[in-house]
Amino acid sequence: MTPSAPAAPAGGSTRTVLIALGTNFIVAVAKSIAALISGSASMVAESAHSWADTGNQVFLLIANRRSLRPADAIRPLGYGREAYVWSLLAAVGLFVVGAAVSIWHGITELLHEPGGHENYLVAYIVLGVSFLLEGTSLLQAFRQLRGEARQFDRDLLEYTLDTSDPTTRAVFAEDSAALVGLLIALAGMGLHQLTGEAAWDAIGSILVGVLLGVVAVILIDRNRRFLTGEPGSTNLRDAAVLRLEQLPDVASVRFIRLEYIGPKQVFLVASVDLVGDDTEANVARRLRALELELEKSPYIIDAVLTVADPGTD
Image: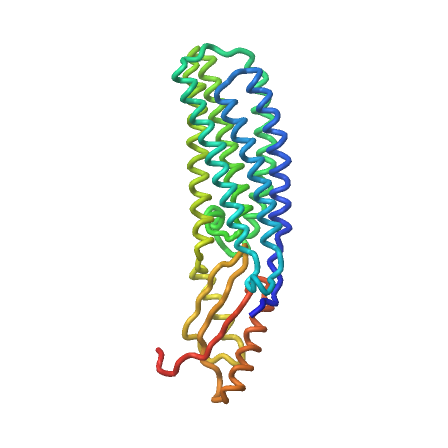
């Protein structure tokens, strides 16, 4: 059955990713220059972090674009799951480029017992400017997620983890990690200057890497779950049952299954009791009419209804 409902709008997600892309590119260039001037291990880690984030935003833009392609004969349920494929690649990139490089560089600096670095002023200035820019990008993601969380009466952090929109979740997680990483880098460089021990700077690099690794693993797991078939939540299921029972031809709902097939897109399968006692041909027509009515929702991409077995509880 070819879905008739349009894909859920992704304008907010695309805008959020574009802001993050521009911000991360500017920050990555500035951090790289500061890393070369200061020689700070923590700043090298932050440079790797920002370049990883910049590349990830490209993957997220591809995710948004490809997931919005309309359904066709080859993919009757649409291409929504492509968002999770490309978002998964972005999370793996964050782990490999951001986490691994940062940890490796920090360990290398520790093993080679680096000497003191100079000219940290440039690094401090770049960290301050980066904090403002990263904060701006995070604010955009925060506003979008907060609005959606309020719409569904959900806690912000809970909604961020559970949302079916992987691109906005990734931007929010990466920008949050970026702000924490900046504070870690600042602490590492500051302790280096105060104590004269360059090991603090190297430890800062390692901690930034560990932080990125944790964030990457969380994002990888969330995308894995949606790729392998994430069911709708209990609240979503209850809302779908209520919607079905409001249809004039439906007497009761015996079984229902909701599965995400893309950002804010679900596939609905249900077994229902119809009002009255009709012929088989008329029942088929009534079921198809009910399916089309459900598919008017921008979120239900396809609906399949069957008549419940009278012998089934």
